[in-house]
Image 1 (cartoon, one colour):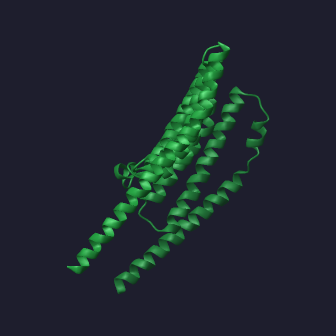
Image 2: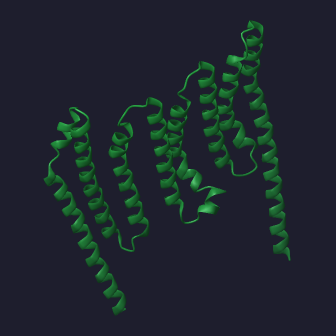
Image 3: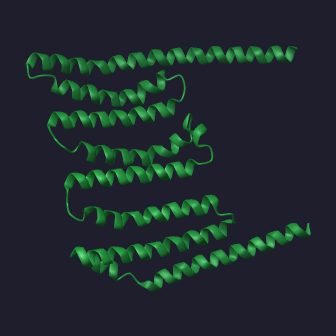
Amino acid sequence: MKYDCDIKEKGNVIDKQSKFFERKGALAGIIIAGVFMIPILICLIVDLASGNGLGWFFIVLAAMFIPTSLFVVPLMAPKNKMFLTMSSFTLSIILLLAVCCIYSGGSWFFVAASSVLFGLTICFAPFIACRRPVNAYLKNSKGLAIMGAYTFTYILMIVCIGLHIDVPGFFAEAFSISLPYFIVAWLMLLIIRYLPANGFVKAGCCIATFLVISYLATFGIVHFMVNNVETDAVVVYSQLPFADYLVGIGIGVVFVVIGLIVGKSGVKKEENQ
């Protein structure tokens, strides 16, 4: 009974301390948010006094959401702090780009937003996938979800750039150069994650896969450039020695053979035991 009472008392103390720090964090977040309101109010007053509309006010207002997402959100969010912080930071940057594009009268928003989204996905996707509440839905499919996010945001970026610049042959050139390496990344993920073999076999398969697809991709780039574009890059790519690919693939095969031998010897030891 005494042991149970001690556990309850410790739990109550922890709950009180947790609530205390939550209140302190919320208070600090309110104070910081109030500080961030100062430049917004200054721009509002200046814009109203100048009589030129509220152009800079909206830009500064959108800009202040960025530090707010980094300092106020983690202090005031009761749970899922990392997920909410990264999500709000991404949205605040995209909002700022939209406001600046509208204010400047440009047409570059989708190019900039998709590029920023791709870059932030590369940085944030592994952390978001491993934190609540996303990890509860992904479970053992985090690697697939992260690679899927990389692939989707990259294709979205290329599509937005291609539609914006409207250059004939852009999509063929962009995807012929980049997609083979996404295929390499996907195959390596599947090999490392799902191939039922030891580390030697997986390493050999990854090496051979990378070199084979790299050679095919290089050949595709050369073929595309010879038929569509006259650049010095054709000379650079066409001088890649085929022997280097064969040596690398041979190393991969050696790793696979070593892995198979090690695997068989391990099975025999288990059977003897």
